[in-house]
Picture (spheres, rainbow, N blue to C red):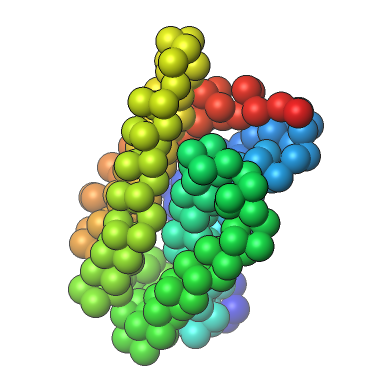
Length: 239
């Protein structure tokens, strides 16, 4: 059997909440950002939302499948995209902090490639034994300690901490109180994204049905709150 039967609760979580909120919702935000301007700063900012949307759509695609190797790979790839998205927030901050001339397109590509290479470790660990997802796990991902720690450690050290640090630096550099207020929304938005990412990571590591159910509701709120990022800066960056 290549397609599994999905219960109503999981159907709602995957096809309504994740696809509707995480996929389509983020693509709409991307369109709003690029409609204002397609300059490099907007493109980098929009890539964050595109990466998350891609990860969410992949998660929706593999949800009904029962090929254990394929499902495992796509589960890891989903997490890879959620982690990859972080680099675009860091680059966005660096461009604001250092200027687009200093953080030019060449450097942007180099940063993305280096981060992607670091994240390849997820596939190495996950495909060997780090991720389990088959009939025994009821086709729900179960992550072991090495996979869990690798994701938490590399994302925290290379992305989350530097992005929060640069966000605070940018806030301090602003003199206009209205701009500072808008930037606070951006900080709130990225905090909710990191919260959602960490919660999903922990939920898959603990692999308890009750935790998954509760986290599904909390993640929905966090997904919606990420709009604060667009409200804070997406409406401000123009030509």
